[in-house]
Length: 163
Ligand code: ZN
Image (cartoon, rainbow, N blue to C red; front, side):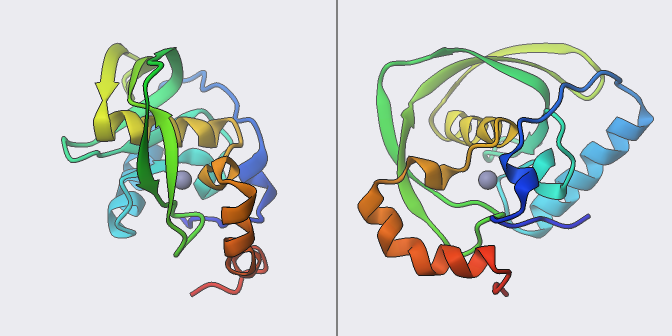
């Protein structure tokens, strides 16, 4: 299982709903968690490993969560700034404004429905990973000026000139 980088069209696709909660899905979730921890990530979405399905794993410091077919039911109006990075955009970090709190619904790997209100770092990671399922990347939120500063680095990643 390999993480793909900015420039790969899979990262820009809207991912498909997961329909079957089976052994294969469980195995896939375990593999994703392994890759996330190995690469020192706090989250990893399925499209980042070339599977365009609505699922991600994250660990915001409180243990591993496997999130399937998530929905963001409510976004708090208060937005806060936090620095983000992404395993698919190596070496790039930037401040992004997002709602401080979100109310979410998703299914775990066994198909059990979960309903949570997330704040702080967990809310941040959840929103970043959720965006991956919509084909959105954190750099999309940056100002034109900030993007201009990062342009040559981003182009290098797109051309595969990383690591
Ligand atoms: Zn990411």
